[in-house]
Length: 601
Ligand code: FEO
Ligand code: CA
Ligand code: CA
Image (cartoon, rainbow, N blue to C red; front, side, top):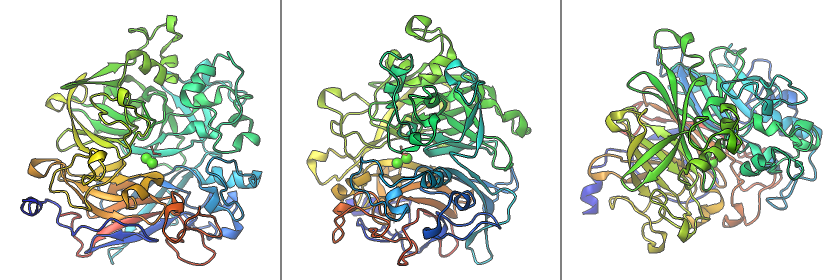
């Protein structure tokens, strides 16, 4: 029976219930404490957060907006210290309507008439990432080390980066400000990411198209390229103030975004590097694993409807004894795109000169292949996916989990083996099995682990282990983490679709092996309008870092009793401060077990 099966669950926590309200919830027996909020000072000389006195200068010394990816590395380097380390956090984007007074959003797609140079400078400073030193106190509670030499803000406006790999210095990367094609100011829309085995932090540039305004003339040599990536997206008005974000003035600038950025968190003065060998697309994340032959494999999803799944295999091998020897491993190797078939899948190399990737098709060199990764993958016949987000290798089993978040636009005639549902509102999870655990292999086996959504509604077409409770199913898997037992913990991003599932986003634990494979269990829930990001375990699995992104923004029109879009003056929730006049604040939360034990056992 369902109950007999459920009693075999490997997750011991009592499940929480679906629902949505103004605050967060975690399973009984656990604490979920706010560790750091947007605007919190991260340097000894940083000003306190004052929402009515925001400035770019203050924001540059404070935790940024919309925390997304969370990475952790123990201090000192190589120690695996679970109680003291560096937290590496992406700040994906900004939500002006609840950040700034007087800018209530009239229409989701409308430009903000009230934006000024000053506000744009704050926005740019609130983007990027933060590296912060954190430590567990004797009371078992985590805190920020404010005077740490590691603390750092990386932004869209102030952080100079270099470009490396095959596209570095390419003619199509050169601009008025940078005739070398190797120096870029800043990074944008950093969604998920990864931590490398050598302790660097990978920040994935996702929806970079949204930051560009203007357009190139019809027939311009970059016109088709821009169109394939949705440039200009016009989500922001930065292009009205800075030529580099106006494509009509700087047609090559968009080619300088959409990469994976590598940051050394152990040196706050280090220059981040855009690693072009990993391709240019809307990188959700970049999750590495050391293959059994020592090569480093990085899995990446291109998060757009009908776009693709990728992996990079390094040419060189990881050297555990010599950190410096690994620092340019991500510059040389092979980028592959996935093609699924019944009963197997193949990884197709994106290598200049092979197959259709030739001058005849407009690829003069490997730089062109990487700058136009999507078009190269189109020509190879890659499988169009339902928005592949996190792609997480499981170091314990060597399986790989692909979060396909949703694709409501897929039509009946567009389904394929790996994306079998038309109008896929709730998404699915694919499990890849490299042969003999060889992540460098060019063919894998694969399976669908779950098809998400409510299993009690036949037309949803969900597929779960029947042991899944009425709260254990979820929609729109986005990010995930693997614990020491090799089990999955999945975070969701339903956008404004939460009203269709009847629950806020959150964390669900997921069985992947044995009789209970495909059973979900609800562990944590975010406040209304938020999305769940992170998640990341400390090395002992006794702390789980979660990023609560954009509280009060998504779908608040459907929030019973609120029924409108949030504004600074009137947000759907003032989480986590709940103080009049203080806007909702994206924050990192840390979950610990009240008895100090390992989470989920
Ligand atoms: Fe930024 Fe694909 O979520
Ligand atoms: Ca995401
Ligand atoms: Ca997301």
